[in-house]
Amino acid sequence: MMDYENCYRWITYKKKAKYEAAKPKVATPAKSASSEPAEPSLMEQFADPGVIGVYAFWITAGVGFSLFKNQIAEPKFASGEWEDIHFDLGEIMSKFTSGGSGAADVIAAPAVSAEVVQSTVDTVTGALN
Image 1 (tube, rainbow, N blue to C red):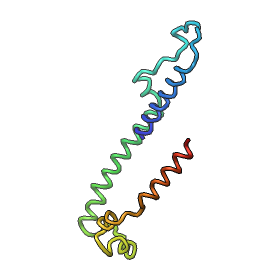
Image 2 (image 1 turned 180 degrees about the vertical axis):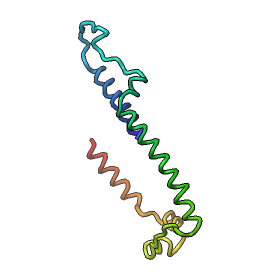
Image 3 (image 1 turned 90 degrees about the vertical axis):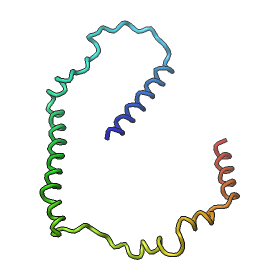
């Protein structure tokens, strides 16, 4: 989630910077300090019930998961009451594992000739020009 938020903010920042650079410079009246909202302090952020709720949820979920894992799941797996989940892929995996060494066969026989690649490149560059 943090990667998405950071990337989104960076893209928004770059778009805003590009827009501001392209915008003509016009003299604007001076803004007073009270017209812009101040950023909330750390204590004001924690006074918000939504922020406290999110933190409480994540802490509770982490504690609950660790309790389940350590007190319920691990002893049952150790005693043999529960077993690991295994899927029998049967024919699907036999198609990938039978007949040859796999990667060596793919490397030895190119699937596409150089002429096909060149014609594709020519078509794309022709469409872009």
